[in-house]
Image (cartoon, rainbow, N blue to C red):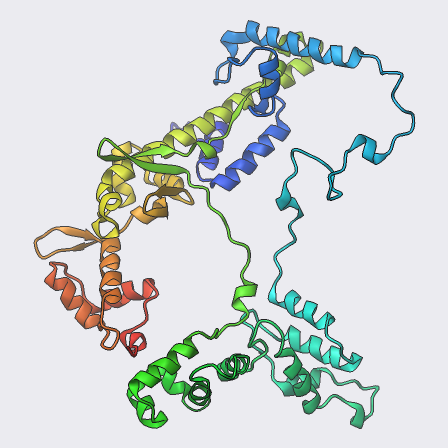
Amino acid sequence: MKLGQQLKMTPQLQQAIRLLQLSTMELSQEIQLALDSNPMLESEEDFQQLDNELGDSESESDLPIGENDDAAEDFAEAAEAEVSEQFEEPLTESMPGDSTWEDIYPQSSTGTTVDSDFDPSTNNSAAEGLLEHLEWQLNLTPMATSDRAIASMIIDSIDDNGMLTTSIEEICANLVDPSLAADEQTTVEDVEAVLTKIQQFDPVGVGARDLRECLLLQLAQLDPETPWLDEANTLVSNHLDLLAQKDFTTLVRQSRLSESDLSQVVALIRTLQPRPGAAISEGQSDFVMPDVVVRKHAGRWQAELNPATLPKVRINNVYAGWINKAAQPSDREFMRNNLQEARWFIKSLQTRHDTLLRVAAQIVEVQQGFFEHGPEAMKPLILADIAQQVDLHESTISRVTNRKYLVCPSGLFELKYFFSSHVGTQSGGEISSTAIRALIQKLTADENPRKPLSDNKIAAMLNEQNINVARRTVAKYRESLSIPPSNERKQLV
């Protein structure tokens, strides 16, 4: 015999935890699956029109419905009577025996079926990638069969950035045909001639073998009367390495241009695209629906759930009223089980929203300075702090803040954004690492572009503001902000 304690997760608890960590998009899909599989669940929009017709706009939509069984039965009888009347109506004798599609489904002036539920987005084609874009242009280009095979091989060797990743020699080797004589095989000159045609395709600069060729192809497409075009070609052809290193002193000496003229040439080169295929290869944007909205009321920032993300799901009172009317015991058992699962599902949804609101409200309360003054006023915050204040476990806080978003006048932020480590100050206080990143970003934005700030200089300036931070910490935060080092930030004014 052994006496012990064991923690077991009930199906209801498992469902609540699973719903808690879902994003808004995943939650809507989960709700739709529940609506499709459980007849006791319905969305409020589905039967809103029927409720209005039956004068039952105040029908029960809360969790417990046991107290309203009589009202549910009355509602069910009224709905059943209306449906029966519709089926008992005789067909009119004037109905034509032969009808056309236009008689049943009226056509609009554009030839499409008139439908109030028509969604234009359903007819959108899939996002076109760079490969499809180039193949489409190839199909519109007059070309011999042999050259078309070479062009297809070249297009297959172009990456998402628009650069040719395979050498001309490798393409020739892949096009060897044993059935042809040696003088009939594809040569390097043939591949280069076809590549020249591919490089005229859109986007400009596609099919280049290196960055220098990519930039030169784009310069060649500019108007010959473009100012500083000849100097830009010379600079890209002969001094691209110095330009990449931003060694403007050496560039001035070797190009024999003044600093003002060199700045004009560099400005023209910066209008070019080093990755011409990136714009086309980018997929469709993912739109995020914020779960929480932050507004200012009576001088304090407060959080509230976004009504657009709240699922409008309720118990189907018609089916619920039919439980006791079912003739077969198996039918009654099936309906009772589905009714109980529906109640659990709605309760889990309510728990999810209550927990999300509690956590978001506490985060907003702690970070009042951020919403008032920006990232520089962000306070250090960890999961344990919020867990202690709302009396929940840290793992629950992690699930709530994962892929949940907050919108405020400053922008859209993931809830995890408001959690950050801290760095000590000389006075013994603490400052958030997010605030330090904001300060670094502000310092680099206001720096002299001719003499950008080094990491040591930024660390010294932060120490002057009573923030103890080492140079390597500044470098780490700067890299996380995608800010290049000082030698790469140097510019000519």
